[in-house]
Length: 86
View 1 (cartoon, one colour):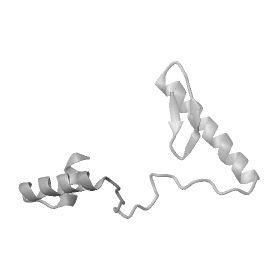
View 2 (cartoon, one colour):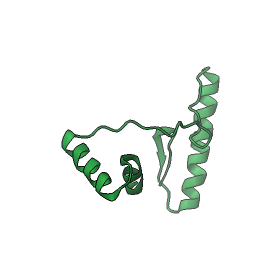
View 3 (cartoon, helix red, strand yellow):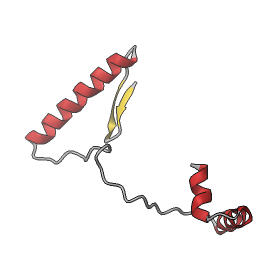
């Protein structure tokens, strides 16, 4: 099986990995050609997309309290604790 992250609705299933990669590559090429013909902009490839390095994370107040206490006990920042878990 192969998927294209920039096109979540596209996937192919093949018997082996190399054939799946070839098939998804051709499928994406076909979709890009269709998009160009229709005047649509393709999604930006994740490999060249700019990321800020910042994310917003939501959690319950209880979780926030627990990990804040854990970070304080370890003598590290909350950010450093969360990064160590990723």
